[in-house]
Length: 126
Image (cartoon, rainbow, N blue to C red; front, side, top):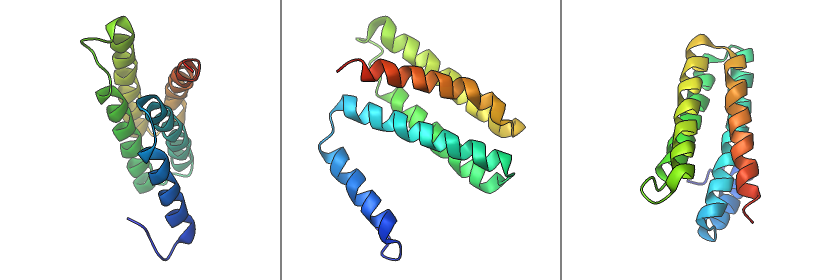
């Protein structure tokens, strides 16, 4: 939904909607990975500033992105790659929850590394 009181967010949402409309599944994965990295950065900032409500919202966004990425996997036909990605997404989810409970940004460092590695792999596909 567009917010008429915030033109920048309205523009950003319109731009995102346009990109999604023309995106391939590979493009969507790349966009989700980029969004996850951005949100992980926000989570870290919220933890450091002890903004617990904002942290919870950001962690939930991260988990939703990870679950979305995981749901796109074809475990039956994707062979070992899909299974390994499923395991990595599971690991990321568990780390996100642990980092949130402990309010420890350091716990997120391996998640960022995993997402960066996955993103690099996706960018090498094309």
